[in-house]
Each structure stands twice: as C-alpha cells, then as structure tokens.
Image 1 (tube, rainbow, N blue to C red):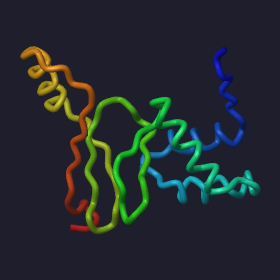
Image 2: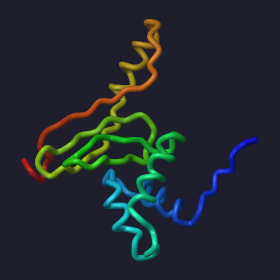
Image 3: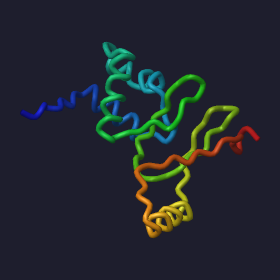
Image 4: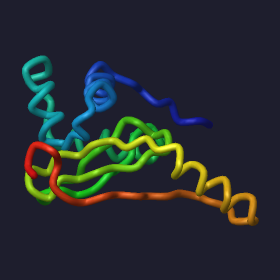
Length: 126
C-alpha cells in the first residue's frame, strides 16, 4: 500500500518559500519568513520537511555556510559561487560546463551527480 503524502498548508509554505527565493536559504531563514503566518510552526518542522524534500529530490543542499545548511529549490544542473566574506550564494548557469558533461558521456562515462562550487569574494565584498 502506498503511503499518502500529505502536503499541508505549512509544508506548502515551506516549499514555496524555498523555491521562490534566490538566496539559498537556511532552515532558520525559512522559519523567520513564515512564522508570522504560522505561529505554531517549529524549527524542527522546517528541518523535517527539508529532509523530506531532499529525499524526494524537490530541493538539494548547496553547502554549509557559517554552520547552517543552505538549500536550493532549483534542481536543474547548475553551479554556485559562495562568498567567503558575507556567505551569499549565487547560481551559475554555464553552457560550457554542460559541454563537459556531453564530452564525458560521449566517452562512455555515466554522470550520476555533479557539484561545482566556486569560493571567493562577491562583487559587493571584494
């Protein structure tokens, strides 16, 4: 028997908050964004739902910045730049990196996942 996945209003709010921002939020950031609308929500609920979303492939972890796991709601292939000063995370969509994938596949490699992350200072901090 299949287990029914109950997408409650709170769960939808968590997912929408993740997917409708480019800041790659932490659980605390998500909590602070939705706690006014859902005052009975706990940080534990946020963490449990993030774990569920990751398991389902709806979101993914980008990195841990300043001790906080940062989440990405964009699951299509792309890279990231993480500022080592302010902790901001930026998406990088690069066709040249996709070309590398094609070359590897043409040579018989099977790519199961990839993670390319650049570190440095962003244009606001440099």
